[in-house]
Amino acid sequence: MSESVTLSFARLTAAPKGVLIVLTDETLAFGAQTQKLLKGADAAITRAFDAERYKGKAWSTIDLLAPAGLDAPRLVVISVGKAGELKPADFLKLGGVAAGKIPSSAREATVVLDLPGAKIGPESASEVALGIRLRTYTFDRYKTKKKDDTERGALAVTLLVSDEAGTKRAVTAADAVGDGVLFARDLVNEPANVLDPPEFARRAEEHLSSVGVEIEVLDDAGLARAGMHALLGVGQGSIKESRVVIMRWNGGPAGEPPVAFIGKGVTFDTGGISIKPAAGMEDMKGDMGGAACVTGLLYALAARKAKVNAVGLIGLVENMPDGAAQRPGDIVTSLSGQTIEIINTDAEGRLVLSDVLWYAKEQFKPKFMIDLATLTGAILVALGSEYAGLFSNDDTLSERLTKSGQETGERVWRMPLGPEYDKLVDSKFADMKNTGGRHAGSITAAQFLQRFVDKTPWAHLDIAGTAMSSPASDINKSWGSGWGVRLLNQLVKDHYEG
Image (tube, rainbow, N blue to C red):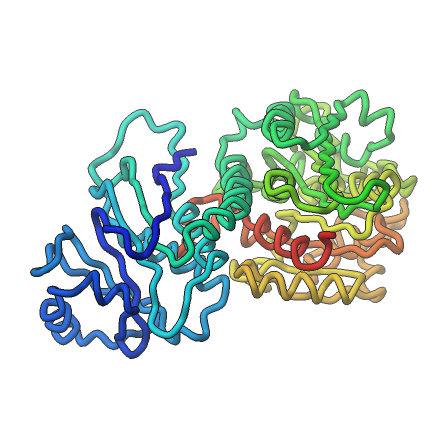
């Protein structure tokens, strides 16, 4: 990971440095302090607005190079549209837009968080700072030299704010969430020859133990003793051992049931014996996006000292074809005791999750379970990359996830479950089969998982379209997005912290 930006905070009255970024609204008005900063450049700004026919549409920008009457190499004006209607996700976007307007050659920049008729408080300012961090993230660990001058060097950004002390306090929590997102991005971006199941487990243990998370790692022998034969079946064709990592953050009252998050962690998915087409298979290094999210989330909760008991469990396997790999037609016995006929070895993620879900339910008796998985291509057909698919047996949990998605911009769309779909995963030879065929592929995958949760409130998030290779946005230019960390942190913050 390369995080080339350093953030600091100062009062609105402080002198700006470097590229100057100011805010306006749909009326092209400036805040009182901004007006003082721009005094002397009024004529140049007015001429620029007229020349560009600038109307102040939300998120539109205008640049002035070395504007007359202003001691700044560049002035950037960003319109937020209707200032009184801004939401938390808008301030995150604002940070990303601002960072995107700073040229790669710049070494200093100042963002003035001042609007006419609307005060930008500490929480909103912290979202702007987080947006800057997320936008400037790059994964360049394996680049030995820069291609050209377009790659950014070190950048110092100062945010001028109305409440310096309050903003610094709010940024502490935002930084914890940002660290979790960026750690998740790092994991998804790593190549599979580096990040195999044992290495993923090692990094999770090293990174999370530093913030007080208790870690337990089950290796192949431990998984066999536990009875996780569905998960082990997926990894038996690889020379890399499988792992399950159990991460516990005890920030709530002793003895209170935890909230539980479960992640699919297929560090590389060839499809096994049912091998995938060669084109695009390199993307299957990201088939552990669910596990990356859970790991980043547990880091974020611990780093910000969340007042909740939380447990994260990730099933880590590599799905490879060799003489030891499981075959279509094999039957495995899951940890729950239910038997599964393998129809397609490329429907492997649900096998991993089936054992880990059951283990979480039995061992921790959680308030709820949420699993995240890059599970089906079918969810991309249904929702594209704008929403994750949400499947759940609990209306309250679904409504809360939907609300948190709207607040953070990591949106979910509820999809149906129903007993009518069960017949598609019933097997002639076992209790169930691991794929229901072409029709309703995302639904039958979720219907399969539901057989391993009993009555525990549960939600399944199919993040195949959002966790990796998702479209670039104002706050993410990375192949791996770290999707879900902010969503689930918001869910916990709003509804489950004491």
